[in-house]
Amino acid sequence: MSDHASISFGTLDRSKAEPFEVGTVQWIRRPGDGDRADLSSGFWFISPDETPGAMRVVGHADETVYILEGHLRVEPEGGEAFELTAGSVATFDKGVPALWTVLAPTVEFFVYS
Image (tube, rainbow, N blue to C red; front, side, top):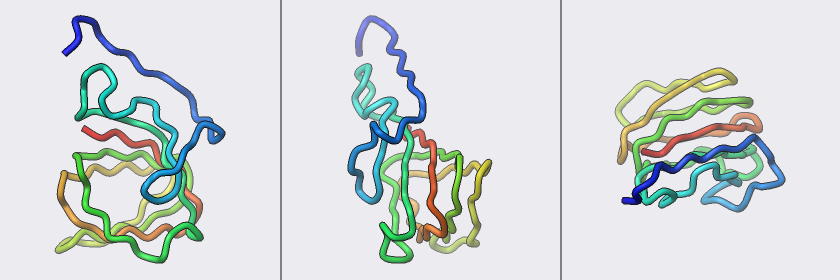
């Protein structure tokens, strides 16, 4: 761990997005910044035409998301389905599988921890 605090900041800027597992991501804090491999954040951009329908997602970290725009449907394995739209917040435990369906072009702010 470093001897000084790390501060990351940025603003939403789609031109800074780069390819991600699905869709694109604009990192605000990349994994490993500030000697903290377990903490990262950024904006995720995704549209229905970038996905093959429902995607099975198993989180590789705890994740909290805030939807800035768009519409997602999340169906946790063994749980009740729910929808996320602009202003929605959700948190997911590491390793919990869920089906994600992108219903409209979406911009999500996320934090992995």
